[in-house]
Structures are given as structure tokens and as C-alpha cells.
Image (cartoon, rainbow, N blue to C red):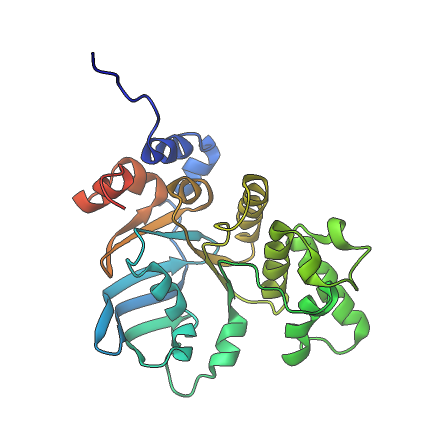
Length: 286
């Protein structure tokens, strides 16, 4: 007697998540309105020494959209994410070729200061990494070094606004002088998001921001991502196809260092154009 496995695949769950999107959100995803391109990559190749990690990657990232980068481990999605604010510059032997622009300006131009670029293109890492400082000073650090506040009152307002946007203010408003490292994992990640937005970036990069969080904390961060896209452009690396389906308007699938396919999230999960994309989202590899 053959027993059939009735457990839904991750692809099926991701597809269901897309199908459950509210009708008005589906309408918003239709190409009726021309996308305003915030960042654009063309012919991006990345090498670690003699080893090539990315091959001829080209993609447009639109303003006020969430773009998810998906693919199996080692496919190059995090490598590409780090290219977007030149974090790969900190890795010895790493070489980037091609063009990446922010509002039409080449971010790899030698005249561009990487520190100023990273103020415009912030990063939230996989593991929460609050500074060993108070909650207040975690948020105030960036505005201080970039000269964004003219006095204590203005700095206080930046801290308050950033925590509010990160959905954390009500939970910490009475203990701003306590260490950020004393918060729960989910709160620490939202603190790091608040720290990133305190310097008023235009783009926020997130490298698997929920991988170390429990389901409740993950839901809070996902809800926050949806709210933040009203003010920021967001690019997120995720191993969870369900998460990509829930939070993003666009999805890009990477495999073996190549960008295989990119498009509206609904289309990628329900009608992929490349067989490799279909095989990945249906669980044939990954």
C-alpha cells in the first residue's frame, strides 16, 4: 500500500502566500505605473582572489519597493547585496567589475567616499549586532558622527523617531539608558533597524534579518519591512520563499553566481520563465 505525502511543500506555501495577497496589493503590483529606478546593476562580476563568485549580474531596483534575493546557499545573493554599499571593499582580495549606480551615480567611482555611501545605503545584518552602548547611544551614534543633529533636542527627536519607525519605542521608552545588548533577539534586530534608519538612508539592505529570530519576532520584523518601504527602498536576502512572497514586490533568483530570473514576486512564484527557477521553488534542489 502506498502512502501519499500530504505535507505542503515550501513552494506551495509560498504560492499560497502570494495568492492570499489582498486584491488592492495585487493591483498595485501591475505594471500600470512606471517604476522609478533607485539602483541599477549592469554586468557585475565579483572575484575573491582567482575565484569568481558572480557572473554578469544585471538588475534594476525600484524606489519604495522591497526586492527579495532568493536562491540556495552559496549562490551569490549575499555577495551581490554587499556590492550595493561596497561592503565587499572590506574583504581582502575581493574585486568587483561592472557598474552599480545609485540615482544614476556610479557608486564605485573613486571620488565617492564609501562611508558617505553607507550612510545612504544602510545595512542590517543576519545576526543582531547592537553596540555595547545604551539603547539611546546605539541610535544616536550615526547621527553624531555624520553631523545630522545640531543639538541635544534634535538628537533626542531623531532617536525617538527612529525607534518609533522601527516599532520599538513603546517597548523601550522608559529604559533608553540601559544597554541595547540586554534586549531580546527580536528587539535587538529592530534596534539595529532603528540604528540604520537614524542616518536617513535612501536604501536599506537586509541580509537574512529574521534567520535568528523566533516566529513572533519574525512577524514583527516582516510587518516593519512593509511599513518601511513607504519611505525607503529595501533589498532583502532570504532563504525563506514564504517570507519573500509575504514581504516583497519583486523577487530575484540567484543560482551558481548568476541572476537566473527577476520579476514581480507573484510571477516568479506562480509562473517562472526559467526551468531552474521552477525547480528551486518546487523544492527539487536548494
